[in-house]
Amino acid sequence: MSLLTYAHTQAPAFSDPKRKVFELIGARVHDRTNPMPPQQKLTAAELAAIDAWLAAGAPPGDDPTCGSSLPIEETPDGWPTSCDATYTILAHAPGGDTQPFSIPAGRELHSNVTIPAPWGSEAMQAIAFRPVTDNRKVLHHWILYGPKHEFLVGWAPGKDNTVLPSDVGMHLAGGTLTLNMHYNNLLGSQAELDRSGVQICALAPARFRKHTAAVHTGFSRLAFTIPARAVHYEVTGTCTATVSTPVTLFSASPHAHKLAHHMRFSVQKASGERIVMFDGSFDFEEQQAYPLAPLVELQTGDKVITTCIYDNTTDRAVSFGEDTNDEMCFNFASYYPMAALSCGISF
Image (tube, rainbow, N blue to C red; front, side):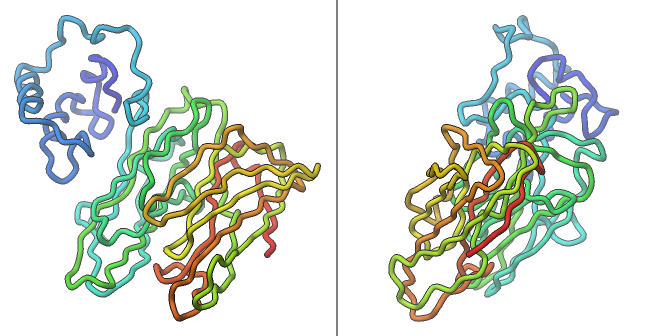
């Protein structure tokens, strides 16, 4: 529900058209489970001012434009203020979407939470994703998949808001979504509860952006083993692009587990040119998405090379796998146009 103008507060609420938006504000700002704003609590003075305004019937102020005829485009953390709707999708217990997910003591879980798309059957376009991280003690990562199991967005430790470029949006189809949760409570002595997930800033069809993006998960190496006590051990995967039209890569997001310490992604163009997209240190606790500047264009025959470098400090060989004590080697790269890119993986 947009709150850009005073008129928006008087509109029918998106979640309950029989009530006006302002009628829901009081409940949301005082909600202890899912408050607004979600990451920075309002002060007592701010709550009192809102409560007094609502008690008076939410009247307009002297200047409903707040001193400007132009809306602010984004907040200091980059979050857009021009969302047509904002949706929050959270992990929850099976059979009850208001109860937190429970992770038993001594367990590592890979759980899928299925959720009907909150925007219904009509497609929307996402322009920003904000992680909701409830219990970081046990949260390893999460991934939100679309109705066709397409990768929409993911979170791992250190990752901040994902805000797409001003001319790019991500397709949000209607249907059933899957929130894949990875929890690690192996060292815990008691069950832990979690309500982590994602907040989505979305646009309605009338305001869709020029480019529709997707995330490619094939820039990876899937089958490998790091020998015990190996130092500076390199794992490399090559993906040869097949495209239906030239594809533009605009961000790279490396992902591995705790033995990786360096990542390198590059493109070997069919022309012979080599483009380095990312070459830097990796820390499991500080995983980020890196905008590509300049943008990288892929054509058929171009090879994307993914290299992950590990120090195995253990006395056992470590292989590819989903658990924390396994390893991974991925570059989740965002590109447009959606569905235009596929590739053959080689080792």
